[in-house]
Length: 227
Image (tube, rainbow, N blue to C red):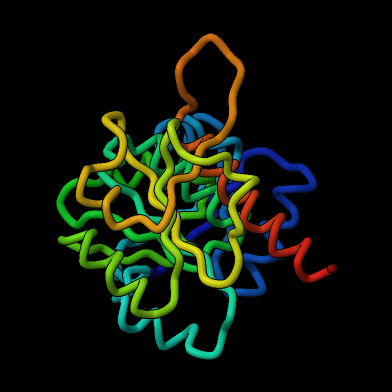
């Protein structure tokens, strides 16, 4: 993806940091008015980077290529998204994946969110960093993960409390859409993880649930490292 220029309307510490980074990467910086950015990106927060999406699939890798990159690693974390079609949820999930250093996000090739601008915005730019794979058959993807020593956990309300599960080594978590996990994917899971809740609403938003589960995996890894 080619970049430039960086358009800056509001001065401040964050803007100065981004300007410095842009100049170090030889990206042109232009000072513009707020109205100019309003026309380009209504939610701009004073800074916009213009890009040309000439390598839109550069962040997509195959599962086979991914397995090669983790060949010598004991721990790895993969998130599978089963029919997450809302781009706001998808973007929010990618933001959590970036923060918890998820190694790969796997989604259905034909039944996942596709609105790139909304995904980029709600992910706060994380969509440019998180490695993704698109598979036409998620059940087959789960089989490949198991063949490569991953334990696979589905996320459902009727599962075992997540903090009682031993989330060690290579872990894959499947998040379902509004209808939950598909029957076939549930059958492929090694266990089902649930987040205990006490509220009056019957479930968490999928992006919130994903963040909680990813945190719990990393918490257990850290505890095991320090044990």
